[in-house]
Length: 232
Image (tube, rainbow, N blue to C red; front, side, top):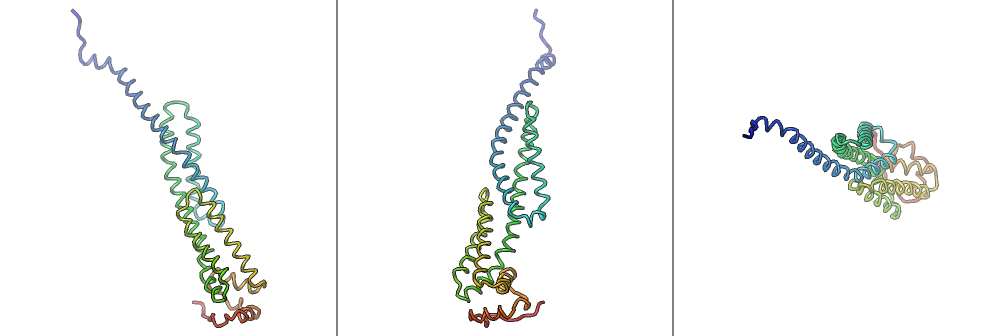
């Protein structure tokens, strides 16, 4: 008579095979996740390169977002070390984990860069609206139109992604070209200081309204376009 195996004994005997099957199934899932996650890394890296290049163009503002830069840098370093060490199956889960950390780090860095570009626009583009009005009153529409183009260029920064460094550099180059145009507009240091001060703040102190500036404004027929107001 064939001895029948107790159901518990049969279950116990099957456990090693069950554990092996579960382990293989788990490994397969993790491997799929790792492959899928790794496929997203090149795109994230391209965005990181663009964001890094954008930061390099905004040296005067970077310290305001030092925390986000540090966190993103650490995440990238961790991922690099994890992927380099992923020679064993059990390391794949760490790869998946670190890749998942990469996306929020990139998004946080992206928000930081956009915040800094807004600050740059606030400081270097928005104040030019007052100068644009002045130039139009002076009949210098060509230079005034250049200021209008700067506004359009700055508005496009918010939707830029990997092209952000190129667009930001183009904006900065156009801003520098405008400064050169202003210098050529009057070809006088005192008038240049008046115009650039007006461009930066939308107003100037009386100390910048020198006799040369008054004479230049008179030549342009623009003396009646300005008023004196006390500082609040």
